[in-house]
Image 1 (cartoon, rainbow, N blue to C red):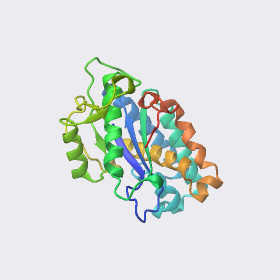
Image 2 (tube, rainbow, N blue to C red):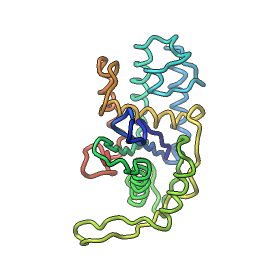
Image 3 (cartoon, rainbow, N blue to C red):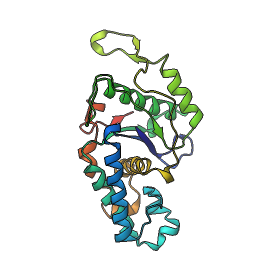
Image 4 (cartoon, one colour):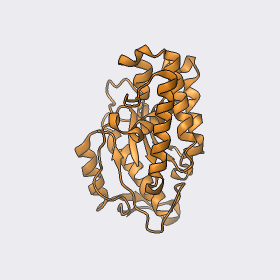
Length: 252
């Protein structure tokens, strides 16, 4: 699972109302094919728009802070985002798990980072255990975590802790209390990646950005109907992640 975010974890003085965490899950047996598809896509947009295959495709920066990519017309940069979403949606064995934290109704001491990541790791664990991801599935499936650089130490400590202590509230049919459902299927510590060197992290970034733009679009995305681009990812949303949302979004 490759993970990136949109928005920030801050509550006091934060410029964002939401924190979106998106995990892109691909089975190791499909990884090579998916990589080749992403490489072909990057070669195509290089030919069409001039975005180099080694240029980082960071969705938010592409619209608001393009840097040297300002040489590409803004409507073409928007087209790149649109075509990237369509490329991902065409990968039949790709899966997106999305966590959305609405920060507008949280207390100042609410742990946005910890609660969002714990929810994502729990959904990854549960979906692995029930073999609900699209693509190949083995009865003893395991997963690994490849996040963009974040608060690396804090995330590593969280995952290690969840292997020993992970209280999950009982479902209604089991009565009050909680069960200690420790993480068993996520192996190793998080393997942090620099997004500039990972097409898969850039894909997770795009997905998180498009979810955020649906929730709280910037003026340009709203004007150009880019806030609707999230719907282009519909085929690869992991609906098993949440029974209370038709796209499987986990809303906190």
